Length: 614
View 1 (cartoon, rainbow, N blue to C red):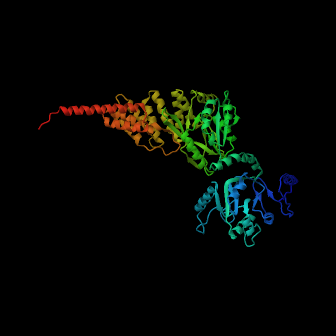
View 2: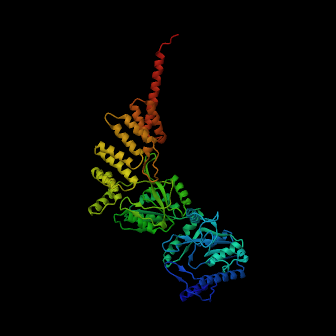
View 3: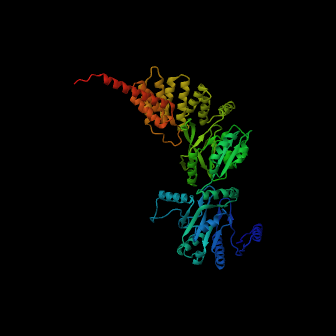
């Protein structure tokens, strides 16, 4: 229906009809009020609404007269996925719309073009009567969340992108005004008339359309189109969303060859930002189909990561370092995690296994926000040891990322901080902590103590960082032979949370290392470590050894020193249950087997020497 006032638009329609077969451009001669739209909203006076209703009813009559199997009514400001029409037909419903989401006001949340009842009610009135505000909010949220999950759902109102069957057309559906109905908008009158005719309305959410509601929305059309093949693949694989992988890299050809094969088939797009490679990093990345972008290194990891995120076009972004790998079992878990993703989820945390022993057991891990919703535009912060500022609906996955560093350790991060320090840049609270870490890792213990103390003195920062700072402060004091301060630092951890196994084991170590050894005190703290529940925080740092085998092994040593060999052996066995191949524990096992065999033989020999009296 050609209702254009702009001649260029009329010419475009004419050219299209000439190029495409079976295209009919129908002029609409009725003139009425001007259609006003701007960057805020669209304005629909009543005369325009019923003018559009007349257009749509004219199209319905055309479809009926030509005995079409279906009529697909679509507004001119929508862009749809190429598979949309075939998918709607496959639903075999009389009336079904493809969903799209729009910010009806510039700063409002995205809302759907479908609703439950009346003018635009987004919740069910199951019990009738007035509902409490909290119930309304809960039901509205449930309805909106459901529409973010791919599926076919019954609704009370729809429009703008609707497939109508021949059966519905012949039943009498239409858009003209129902005289005794005060609802505004021709779509509402269509929906009420359809329900009165016994026709059920549905919305399909597998292939959301893109709504160009404002001129600024034109910027998103190309990105929407780029997701076509990836979205189709996701649907075929039973996924509802697409995922980009983002990395920053410099001279990582070996790491990429090791890590990308394990994840490339799980991702819909790979973005690699190169910060100045002189090896084959770019060539290797290209072999795996990556999009490669250059970013001049400016001593700022957050800036590089934000640049990588800005290039992603899929629904979600997963980030990795070049020397991270996804092990075989975790690949399966990650595939399940991605398949379970839906647009109601803002972020997924995953374990990050930083320390792994030669037997493949994890010794140190923490959780990171690993997969995030792209449209949330989450930002990275921090030149070194950057973090992603995430909020909203966060879920937790068991799929782990394993750090597999083979390059030699360098003082790169320390030097970045040194340069910031020399330039007089003010350190953030978080930087105080991480500068302390770099100083400690590079054996500058006295300076590290200074920065840990500065950090803790602020009384601010993430509680897990505060606990970790106390643990590392204690380690510095141990290296500086200041036992009392090491003790004090470990007890400071309990200012922030319940006792942690890491601190308890370290306190036990200090007692055990005394001359003479204070075994009873050491046993108390090791026993406490074995009984503690793991931290409630999903993102807490966890030294796995302290929460599993290490306190049991230490208890074995303590009880052995006390001559309580049964208890010592019992704790060694408990430790072995966690680490069956641990060489020290296996030696202990052999030691106690031989000791108990010798004790038994000694007992038997003693028994044999005792005279038997009749």
